[in-house]
Length: 145
Image 1: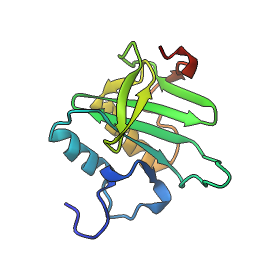
Image 2: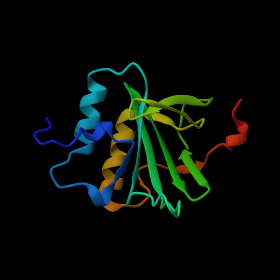
Image 3: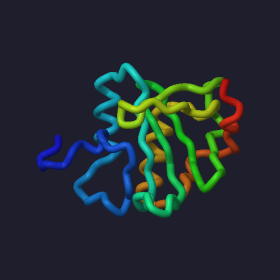
Image 4: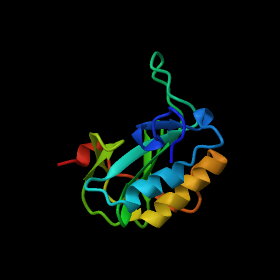
């Protein structure tokens, strides 16, 4: 339960590790939202710092989402996008940033929601690409139909 004036973390499209206070439970808030049942896939991006809009420089980010029993993971580092080797979706799927703005997610990015949450915990602890997931290059944007 949110007791201060801050919007729930699930309302943020981009979550910067350096802006999170110790009392923010990202995984708890995402889990509670998902446990209530979601009609569309919700997604967020986690990064060390918020991207600078003037330079458009962005560090590595972990994009993740939840949609009941499944979710997705994508690791973005520059032009490289990695997806789990165990991803189950054969085609591009739609998730919505903070539940609102549609985004297409690469094939093979969907995995069980438990793995998504474990990867988020690891990223929040280390700031590095999660090692609880084996990664492979994701499909090119040109492969969208």
